[in-house]
Image 1 (cartoon, rainbow, N blue to C red):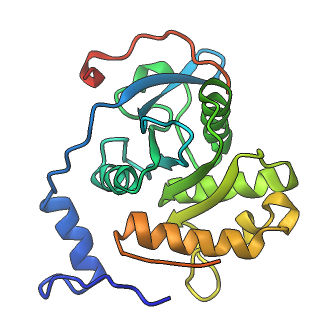
Image 2: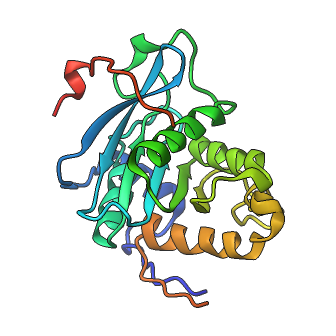
Length: 229
């Protein structure tokens, strides 16, 4: 599947692009988001920014940031913009302690906290009745979503449609590691999930024009003032 991405002549290398993204921030305008605090463990909330289409039955992208990131990271905003433009709902999830929520958890976020992502999924499925969702993760967030897909296995929620990771675990040939996601649904959708991961990365993470065939209720915690709209 050829990519239509063409870097700027001065930004051809991956290292240069990484530095440019840090020093040359983009202006990304998004519509106002619903701020939702979702309890991932008793007494521990995470802050999510939910962007809804008028019809919430659209596919929902649940996006998880990487180490030292947050829901306000440039790549998170970029995916949200692309997803909304494509007619999808987008939920930008902060991991615990992130997004101004340092005081809300005695434990730090880390690569083992896939249950936090599962709790957010459960809240959206139960409260909003979303009919389908895709997990997208960057770096450590990519490891988390792949880990969760593998842990679900044949017990994945009926609404689960796919998983995509950027900069997370890699396979033996450098491709995104789909081993975890291939176990979702007991391996019955391994090929489908692999191609969905490729498609989602190109379409919503890289911004390429790609075509392919074929839980719980959150408690009323106070949102920190620095996160207020």
